[in-house]
Amino acid sequence: MAPPAGQIRPGRYLAIFALVVVALYGLVFLTGDQKPTPKLGIDLQGGTRVTLTARTPNGEPPPQESLNQARQIIETRVNGMGISGSEVNLDGSNLVITVPGEGGDQAKQLGQTAELEFRKVVPNMVAPVQAPPPPGQPSGTTPQGAHAQQPPSQADPEAQRAAIEEAKKTRQSTDPNVQIQALQALDCNAEDPLRGNADPKLPLVACDQEKTQKYVLEPVFMPGTDIANAAAMPPNEQSPGWTVNLEFTGEGGKRWADFTAANVGQQAAFVLDGEVVSAPRINEPLLGGSANINGDFNQQSATDLADVLKYGSLPLAFDQSEAETVSATAGVASMEAGLIAGGIGLILVAVYCLAYYRLLGVLTVLSLVLSGGVVYGVLVLLGRWIGFTLDLAGIAGFIVAIGITADSFIVFFERLKDEIREGRTFRSAVPRAWIRARRTILSADAVSFLAAAVLYVLAVGQVKGFAFTLGMSTVLDLVVVFLVTHPLVALASKNKFLSKPSVSGLGSVQRLAADQRSARRRGASTAKEA
Image (cartoon, rainbow, N blue to C red; front, side):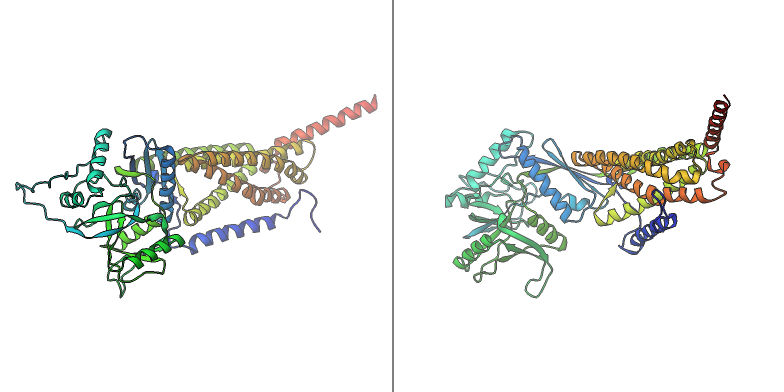
């Protein structure tokens, strides 16, 4: 037989909560190979902050659409590399990448433009890079008609444009004589003004990544967008070193098959950001829709290249203008101050509740402690499962949530007092007070959760962390109020000792209710005598 409306079986609810806690901490301690602690953000554990500055061929500010696209691609690269807790934000024409912990070396590689192109090597147009002359010795003369490569000036857009145009005239000329002269004049150790600015429809004179060979390359016959997937492959019997395996799209596979069938015995250059990564000789037609990039790779460099190619090319070229290590000292000091503030607030709430509610105040403190335990376990699991990191803004969200949780208890207790003032006993008042209080609690928490959800959708950066923890705490508040606070109050109302007015803290309310009943009886008797 079901209990009357508002009445529950407290033991059943408390057992459900106990099972939830056991299951939660079972996952915390028995799953994963990480410590049972929440992941911390960059402001609490330190990390790396990398600033990338966009540059364009004409020196003009880059389009906002291209910046947004670049930010999305870098975010995808971050997620693909498994770097959790990182942020990619726009600051004018800069992209600011913050990575907590020890992912700094990977973060510094995230700004690669990764413009992979496939070009045919012009036969007999390959030259070794000559060793630099001893100090004080002349390096030779520049061949007539060619110009030495000059680095573009980031501070002077006009000089940058001039350097790019000058490099295009020589290194992207269609005249074989100019190509030979550019091949001889190219300095592989100088900054390349054509990085990210080369015209794919024109030939290109380029160096390899090891700075040991120079090539004259034909126009692009297949762009990097025809790559469907890329993966780093360890050494095997066919290849003694690490390689990057490419899988092409349907159209890309057809282009690759047609090119290799028509150019057996020739070289195909894989050109990444204007540099030749590999230039293998085609021994036979390759019809399988795949290819291998061979180079001087180790496991890390092969993996980095594969990830960059897999997650797309950036629409802009970026220069790394700043890369700094962020210390956690200031963040830890702020966290300690925040925790002290939260602790003081929690103590004040506990003192007030104990002084004003007595037994009900004890139940409030117990419920807050249990709520904190559930929140901690959830934070640990969210850090493992979705990479959620706790930062200062998130801690602020939890501190604000203390007030929301305590407010739910107060709504219930004040409704309970109202029922007792109407003449009901502690035991009979609990179910009626709960029926009325839970509607108010649900409405208030729904408004808080909706506000947190809207803030999370509209906000960026650390404000998202504040909104997330606030919304999560609001949901967990309902779990504790329904499965712990209400059942404990119901149990206390059925216990003779705990329901005593001097213990429960409801003595003043019960005396007031008794005085009101006595006054009503005296008034009724007086009216009857009259």
